[in-house]
Length: 250
Image (tube, rainbow, N blue to C red):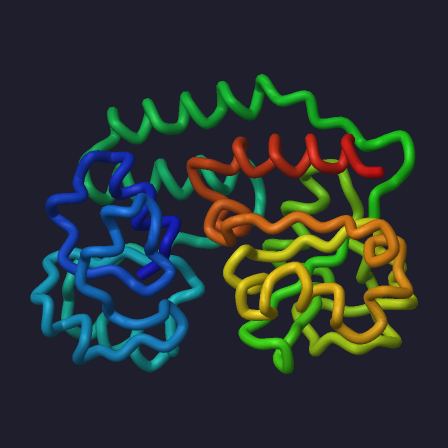
C-alpha cells in the first residue's frame, strides 16, 4: 500500500508474490503492470480483498483509518511501517518488512548497500546557505508549497540546504506574497508536478516566482517524487543528486 514498500519488496526478491499495489508504486517499472488498489491514502477494503491477499504491507500514510480498521478485523497478517523521515528510518523500513516476510538475510544486504552509499557521500552545507522552495501541484491552478515537518522539508535539510518556508508546517496553497517573501534560490519540484504545470514554461509563469532569485536565474530541479520523498533504498541517490545541485548553483 505504498510505493517505497513496493520498491523494497522488489529488492527483497518477492515481486512474484505481489498481487496488488497502490498507485504510487511505479518503481521499478515492472510494478506498473501489477493490479492497482487505488491511492494509499484513499483505499477501499473491497478493492484490496478482491485480490485475496494473505499479507498486507503499508505505512502509516495508508488510509482512510476506517479501511485500515476493517482490514485489521479480518485477521489478515498486516504490517504498518512507521514513516520516519531519516536515513535510519529508511533502513528500519527494510528491516521490518524483511522480518515480516522472513527475508532477513535479503534485508540485511539491502541495508548494507544503503549504508555504504550514504557513508560514501560527502554532504556538506554550501558556504552560502541555499534556500529551497518545494512545490507540489496537480495543475497550474492547484499548487502547494511545503512548510516544515514534511518529507520534502526533511530531505532538503538532510542534503545540506534550507527550506525557504519555515513560517508554517505541512503544505499550504501557494501565494505570490509567500513566494516573494521566501526568496528561494532554487525551486524543487516533482517531475510529475512540473508536467502538470506545463513544463518549465509553466513553472516560471506562476505568480510572484519571477521576483525571486530562483526565478531570475531560472534555477530549478525536477526529480522523481518516489526517489525524492520515498525515504527508501534509494535515499542515498536522492541526497547525492540534491547535494550536487546545490553546489553547482549559479
